[in-house]
Length: 125
Image (cartoon, rainbow, N blue to C red):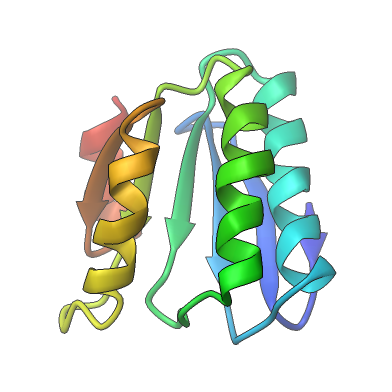
């Protein structure tokens, strides 16, 4: 479990997912440290999928987006994770940013979207 004022990262064993909940804007190490913790959870749990709750999300800064593609994605791709799921808000407030990231994410993973944790269960079973 990882907790900060910006993000929580936890393993949900019943779904075999690492669950990343973004709470407010952050950048640099405050953004990167929880994602690296998520990779460690994926390494430790065979078949663990990645889920990000972006409903309280924010747009990333360019340097963090570059880091996401250059560091996080290659490290996550070394695990047995095959799916990245975004929990989005009903208004799709981050739709443009997530769609931009999805192009690169889909090189490594299946990318799915849902609106709630309850809906998530149907995607990972």
